[in-house]
Image (tube, rainbow, N blue to C red; front, side):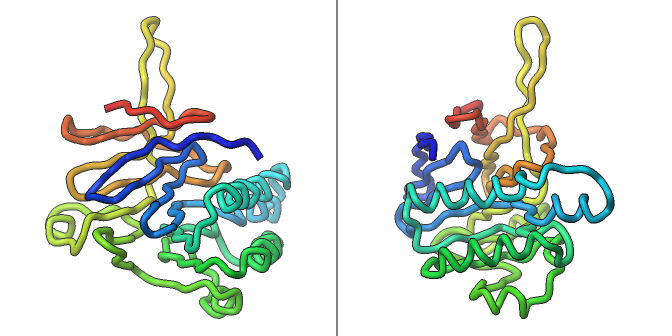
Length: 221
């Protein structure tokens, strides 16, 4: 296990660590928060005859295990798209991982890709919600906009869009980093899964944006 320091961020009087593994550790709640793991995506593509290395799936579960070993969370909240598609062979890896971490409370906020039947999650003692209020934060999968955002009951933590921030070098070279994007009313987390893309976002001047490097998180705006 390689230890990577998180970036301490006090927000709404809560102590958060923004982790280079693309998750948040919420210290007061002893809770890990991650979005868009997309387990089963490897199996989904392999089932369709597309060659994808099998170990990519286990790498994501391994990264979660490393975070558990380092931070000893009592709870993990997944902000949707824990699995990419319907049941496939990768479910067995998740079931074994869950059994090894049976004492941790696991909550899944359902996302658009979470189509596996509830009974399979309940058999593994995974609780499902459409949304969940915890302290000052409202856990969702999809970001809100307009009146729904203005009327939200809490500051929103969400995922879905796999946010990235584009940096431009002096020679006009460009790179897009995964990022945590905190706006006035909601924060969008980067996709935890390694086999996922990212989309450059356009942030407002009042936003706080944190780019994710290999072993650290840096403030961009």
